[in-house]
Length: 485
Image 1 (cartoon, helix red, strand yellow):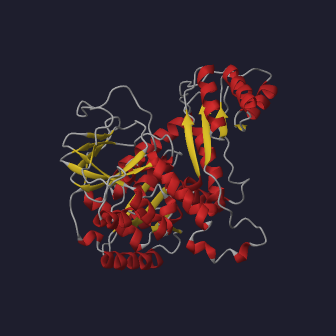
Image 2 (cartoon, helix red, strand yellow; image 1 turned 90 degrees about the vertical axis):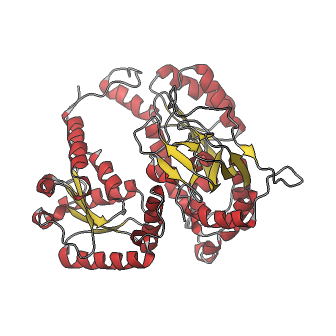
Image 3 (cartoon, one colour; image 1 turned 30 degrees about the vertical axis):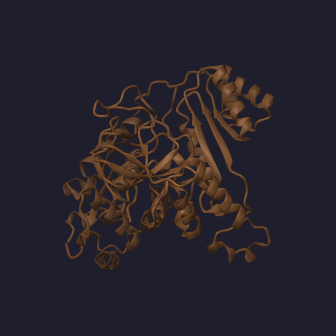
């Protein structure tokens, strides 16, 4: 079934900028009109056909990992809590960078997805496509803009309903069906299971982008995925960035206190840093200072005070230029072109079409690696240059047929095509089998990495670990940055 177009194509959340595309003629915020089919309590009635559609779509929402565990009861509860709303042609359904509190699934009609603030081709979305899932997880803005291309009917999941259903399910069950069998095995308290709890709010505060704190929180939260299958099922992260005043901090900490939130902060400005400490103490809010201890230690070692300057200009170092050159090289040789340049690469990715080679290539390029990639096609010999480069640079990607079919089906929907041979499951199974045999025959030294359920960062980390371990231990693989003055 459809995987969310906006989420499949776009990156992380983006802050709102002034102005929007001239094509987006914004109407009042509540542009969608409720369906006339309403029950006695004022809730919009959805049909059995709608529920069947949602039963297929919701497990494919990649942002909501808790739904991907196959908990049919939970999925049906969410489907039944959703409402049907209407939109007229030209209505703006979502604006990139604008916060919202709902996810929308298209039941009828066509919607145009685009990102006016970032270069992106327009994407035509239709029945079964969704957008706004990221908005259910916190104060995250829309990743794309959405405009009704025709009169539409959409199925709406509100954040409040989502929270209520998720938490009631946890309270009733404690564990998902597939985890109940493991309960007896974990009586020794080794942490393989946990009791259901209340929603945990995590507030991230920063006088800059908040990216370092967000990354740290995400990494830490991954340690608790065994609890509910998804950190988003039991926690919500809200990022407050570019904080400039004491009053902003006071309001945020007061809100954190009312929600019993954990507060994580990174401040370069010493005055704002102290305000956060004082306000957390006054409101008895748990505050975690990520940068303070490090900056304090460096002040002692340098014998100087921090500048307190945030958002400084990027210094053009040799390391920075290495990254720029790596990105340019990776762009130039993407998708198997210019094999005469492959000998310059640091990493060569090989795998089937839509296995995630391109996003992985650019992720690694942003870390200074020149990356080439080649899409394998059954019964087609790759260029000879693939076997002439150092084979230790090659990494083979594999993916489960069902996952590959879902990705390709979504890709075809972007072009309004259905039931193509490209996305046929039987054909994909044969293709995946052929590729595995190809790896054994032609690339016996290539490490094989499964990308079926791994994100770009996880796969990249695995590749970098393999490369480092080839050098020896962590001491041999250590990297020293250029001297900074």
